[in-house]
Image (tube, rainbow, N blue to C red; front, side):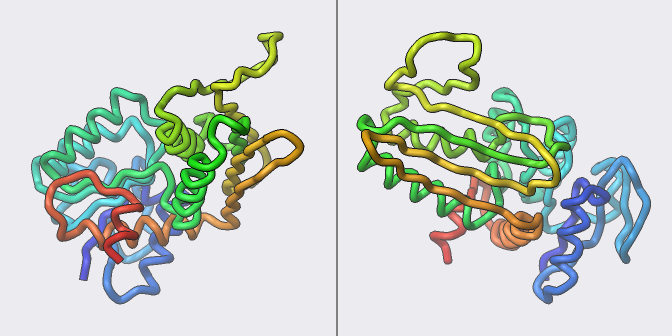
Length: 252
């Protein structure tokens, strides 16, 4: 049985995780962390991670980048594995996450969906075949409450593609202010915000007289919660290191 604490317990994703865990017999939520401490289940919710009364086997974070420092401090002090599912981190914060993984197990990915990670692998294969011949554009759509743009997932997909291209391409976020032809060595990035769109990511490979499109749609937040819970169980008994979805998949 894996004891899980959820950071961001009173948020939308925190409550979805609670619902997912309630139907499983290999894990349970023992505590929540949230600035709003109203309880809605049989576990306590504290305002700070340092207020946890018992040490969990693993912490899942679906909160806000501002909480990162105190989470890393707690987990490194207590040797607690950490699943980071929050997005919107700066490069400096990502460096802190990677540094912490030398002391504790850290599961860090920009998207917890199995389907998105398959999309990344398909994009990698497509780039191997089409790179240099096709223009590449990435379009992502999310609900109107999402703050960061482009999404962390879109950036992850761009990084996967660019790695296959020898990191020789640049990301172009906006073209309205520049009147010139599209460069051959750029990846276009487009963010759409509206309504209650859970998450859509589309990669367009546009060539001469043909277009190939790879697309993933998330129809509910549960796909991310299931991935996060699986990740928590996966790293709960792992040694220090940086883990992601590809490592979890390859380990069965």
